[in-house]
Amino acid sequence: MVAEAKQNGVASKAQLMSVKRGEPTLVAPAEATPTGEQYYLSNLDQNIAVIVQTVYCFKRPSSGHGHESAVADVLRAALSRVLVHYHPLAGRLGISPEMKLTVECTGEGAPFVEADAACDLADIGDLSTPDPTALGQLVYSVPGAKNILEMPPITAQVTRFKCGGFSLGLAMNHCMFDGLGAMEFVNSWAEMARGATELTVPPFVDRTLLRARDPPSISFPHREFEEIADVSGMAALYGRQELVYRSFSFDPDRLERVRALALAGGDLERCTTFEALSGLVWRARTAALGLAPEQQTKLLFAVDGRRRFVPPLPKGYFGNGIVLTNALATAGDLLAAPVSRAAGMVQDAVRMVTDEYMRSAVDYFEATRARPSLASTLLITTWSRLAFDGADFGWGEPVMSGPVTLPEKEVILFLAHGKERKSINVLLGLPTSAMDAFKDLMDEI
Image (tube, rainbow, N blue to C red; front, side, top):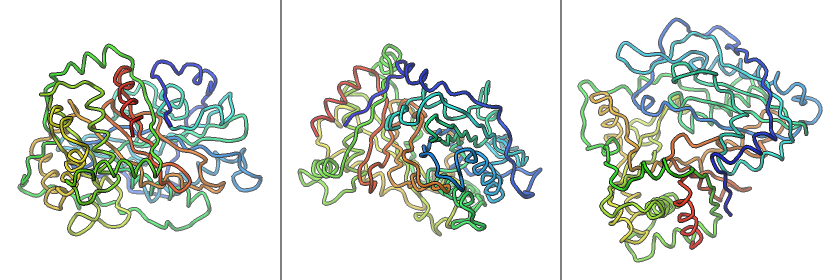
């Protein structure tokens, strides 16, 4: 199954939706929270300060709690209560004396917007493919904001549809939390909406656990920061052709075929679905883009470090507990070898992530202030283990949820879907000609 959206060809859906927003209001914490201080963001938070936009769609609520006319009131009141626990989200980003991102604890609150769409919920499709022009109407962005310092850590928009269904659109800065942290926040918000007085997973807000060592000790090369020269004319290709988004669905049978490819030849005794699929996609994207054989290509992906740190991070850690790891190869070497070789490189990159590797990465940023380079790079981010669909605010789980867009053209997203979440949607954007070639390669699986 393939779903497609062209970046410049979505006017019809966007016009059909014709969302009209009300004026934003600020939702402050329901109780007094610490103000007048700076909230520390770790070096793992500094590297990924991008806005992540997601949409959750719900059917028309039944009468009683959370009836459609009261949905926004329920969500607003629950947000106010959950911000007591997640008080930094009510502040604003700033710069610390060390010239790093920090949160100014102002307590002013999160922007909350009510909106109405001129269509039914069914008209927006299934959210299987990023669609920034249309789905962007369901998320509130601060008008005129020129950089992340002018954007609140989180905004929320509730959009009512003609059918009585509604959506919740969130814009959250990745420096505040990674995928697991965001999921725990949304689920905590949902608990409050259902009337809970205590959270199942209270946030652990002290990020100083991940301070750099003094002096910093860099014990790995950290090639994730390496700048790679574009010898294949990729900048020109992306500038010349329209960017096309597509979603490729891998059901359990197809995923098993991918794993079989990765295990063929006997190079690997075992491998995970993630390792096999990442190796396949890295190799296929390299081929589809027509990279020169001598072109260095880098794969980046995040590994959850919560249990890999010594000692492990506390349950409910509110912050980024993920660390980027990497694999590098020339396009020629990657394509001359079978999928098993690429999968093995992914496996090696996973194994590299130890407590010492992660603390070395924290220290590397402390010493260099470098940020991972995306030149000639594929960055895979996986939401396949995140139970965002479990966000029940009192009227049932979302009928669908997904990202509005991908944060960078180099990003591919693995998103779980299906009744038992055993299938994976691979979402990516490529220039038109490369996407056609990528689709042909996927059709062979």
